[in-house]
Structures are given as structure tokens and as C-alpha cells.
Image 1 (cartoon, rainbow, N blue to C red):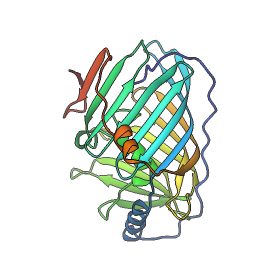
Image 2: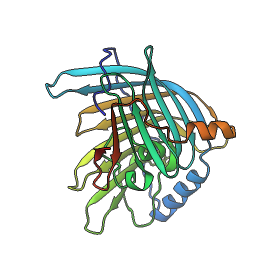
Image 3: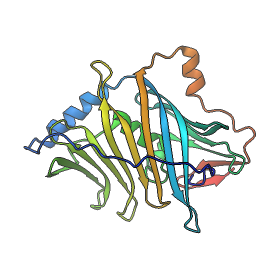
Length: 269
């Protein structure tokens, strides 16, 4: 996933918008209810924008690539995310309630990855481009009363742990607005592997707020991604659009076709 292709270009430095308010209390049950209401109020949306990717190869050489992006999202699980250059489509992520797929088209890569949503749910930190992570960034974060609540400064932290006490995920929210500002995912050793930073929220009428700035840090591959969404609008898809955007395409013409297995690894088919 890190070696998309080498189009050297500049990237704007990511910025983090300060969370609103100072922590003044609030119970986990109140926050769980607020998140539930927000998820119910997330509406289908469409957006354009740009994405900057920075990564290093095995020789510690840094690469940067700018992509124009198109996004379509039908909550809770259908998503279409496309990145392209002047040379055409470079990467595409799609998902429905059953499957997900990631297409990388440059000649140097030519890779088609796919799997079941039930499997990717257990592998949220394996890749920087992940349908579950994008859906959560766009408002589908789910928390319950088993999460631990703590507060520091102008943020509150929600922590999900497994039965053995290992941290699985953390969501940092603004104390005044309770909007997710940072989402962290952890590996099976308890180390932080993926970080989403969410800023510049906007509203579509009375719907739940949507972040228009999404910064992604994938520590294992030393990949930094800065996504800027523009022209965020309500999406009212036709039946043809629903079928076309959210149905997994056949892997025709790809040199490598890989499927996600139960060990969170992509294996050649």
C-alpha cells in the first residue's frame, strides 16, 4: 500500500484544529447516547478534494504524491473513495455491507486487494486505507458503556480494551462539542499502529457534523496522509449509482490479486 507510484510533488503541512471547550465532566453513558444519536444522524454525502501521501522506501528515501479525490458515502457501510492524477486513476477503495476492495492501477503496482467486511473489522490497523477507518472518521464511531472514560486538558479519551486488559482503540473527543478529534488503533501487542486526526468539521443542514480534514499516520510503514474534503454535499444516489459504486468489480487486468485472510494478511490468489 505504501508504494503507490512516484510522482514527486509538494504537500501542505497538516494542521490540527484545537478542540472546543474544557472538560467539565459527563458520564460514559451520556457520551454513548450522544454517539448513538450522531450515528443515526449521519447522512449520505459526496465530496471532492485532494490527498497528499508521504512515505519512505526501504532505503529511507522519501516520496510524496498528490491526488485528486472523489468520495461517496452511504452510511453505515457503503463507501467509494477514488484518488487520481493527470495520468488517470491511481487508487480506489470501495465497500458495501459484505465486501471491500482496494484497486491500485499504476503499472508499477497493478494490485487488486479484497476481502470480507467481517474480516477487515478485526484488522483496523493493518493499512492506512481501510473502509472501517474511513467510515468511523465520517461519523460511524461506535462506543458503549464498556469503554473507559478519562479526561485531560481540552480532550476526553474513550478507551476500548479486550478481556485481557490490552488497549484496542482510543477515541479522543472535544470536551465542549464531543466531536472525535483523534482515533487511535492498536496492534495485538498493545502498540499504537494507526492514528486518524479529524479537523475542520462542517454540517449538512441538521445532519451530524463531518470532518473535512483527515490526517492519517500509519506507523508501521511510516506513511503520512493528508486528506482535504471540499464541496461536501448531500448524496442522493440513483439505483444505478448504488449498484455501480458499491458493487465489487472483477479483478480483470491486474497483475496481483490478493485476498485478506483471517490472520489479517493479504495472500495471492
